[in-house]
Image 1 (cartoon, rainbow, N blue to C red):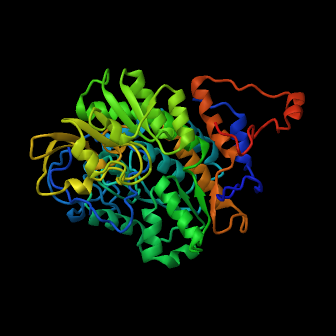
Image 2 (image 1 turned 60 degrees about the vertical axis):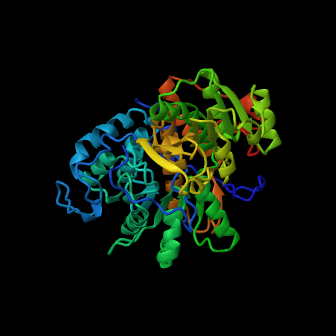
Image 3 (image 1 turned 90 degrees about the horizontal axis):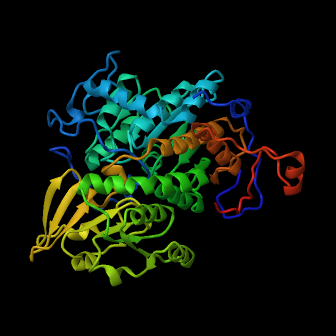
Amino acid sequence: MEKWDGNTGTTSAFAVPDWMIQFADQKQEFNKRPTKIGRRSLSRSISQSSTDSYSSAASYTDSSDDETSPRDKQQKNSKGSSDFCVKNIKQAEFGRREIEIAEQEMPALMALRKRAQGEKPLAGAKIVGCTHITAQTAVLMETLSALGAQCRWAACNIYSTLNEVAAALAESGFPVFAWKGESEDDFWWCIDRCVNVEGWQPNMILDDGGDLTHWIYKKYPNMFKKIKGIVEESVTGVHRLYQLSKAGKLCVPAMNVNDSVTKQKFDNLYCCRESILDGLKRTTDMMFGGKQVVVCGYGEVGKGCCAALKAMGSIVYVTEIDPICALQACMDGFRLVKLNEVIRQVDIVITCTGNKNVVTREHLDRMKNSCIVCNMGHSNTEIDVASLRTPELTWERVRSQVDHVIWPDGKRIVLLAEGRLLNLSCSTVPTFVLSITATTQALALIELYNAPEGRYKQDVYLLPKKMDEYVASLHLPTFDAHLTELTDEQAKYLGLNKNGPFKPNYYRY
């Protein structure tokens, strides 16, 4: 398996279990803000990583029937268990329907559940997770359970939890600690309830943003003696793992799912291409034709956003620091500019860079009246929202996750999701894309959990290309797609194994 060190030379073999091979050879049969919420601190010592990936925030019901904090409620599921904390356990029936809908668009997980559960490759695994708690995550959790794992889960984002799905999971017996609109204190309390439980020691971590991993390092470092590995799928979380590794503080192997081909190309590109329009429509009811938009960053997320907006008739500008991505933007028909050059004229500003302070107070002061500002990239650091919380500016909540920030002269901007990731907080993400990412997570957990001692060192590893290809192949039957097979002569000519991998490690899709 390729180490995350930029070296594409030496790799260790990825042993494909028999149950995976057998499966591959067979054809598949087959998001109003709460009335009362605590606001997360604007100055977290930990980078706000809880908005890095994907989720669906269109809850069945956002308005609560009471304002009591879930932490102050005494709730039990039908089996008498109270080892959970959700908004309202009575919403479980609606959540179960959401999960059943998601299952239809997650064919690989359903097939994996059906074909591999006999062998129980995760038997004995005790997985503690911190991700977006959505219907799609529920399908993943129930798949992991079917494969033999025990799971405890918290939310990595204070806005993205679907309360009814969390209720459904709690009703099914999963210890889930999450609700939409958590406060800063709630957020860490939920994570602690997942980890700090008598008689239960996690041996695997599935993280999205690194907050769970950080919490265990900070509060319960001895737990790492029994943890076999970490699977991380966000930009921020992976960055934290690099830092730990460089400092010699990473004490277990970690799998970098974020930089897998299936994550970069599908979750980032194709997902954002659809969800950017969904998020903007739901929050603003705007028409895209003729609107001037500046997209900051032309990585995979930026490419998806630009393609969607261009197709809807918007005039799209791009800002970039990387000359290669910049040239790609030019070749795709977008005008490359500096933000200062267009900030007075654009109707929408979208950040997709993974950086911080991309849109500063100076930019915000110069924007035209009613300019829409939103983030599709890293955490909530790209837009300097903190600079807007000053006495001279008035904040006006107009609808769920939509704020008007009003200047003394009457100018206002429309800020979406308080600068957090738009498609996490304000819309849904296509389930099929999440199926690809969730399958990759499941296989990474299986690989790390079952790996013989010594295969993986205390370092960060990339998924092997063979696994990326395998995940892709599991989703092809949905389209009734038929792969061409190499002849022996063709395979010999190309110097390939007939079963892959089909591209070298340096190949860029």
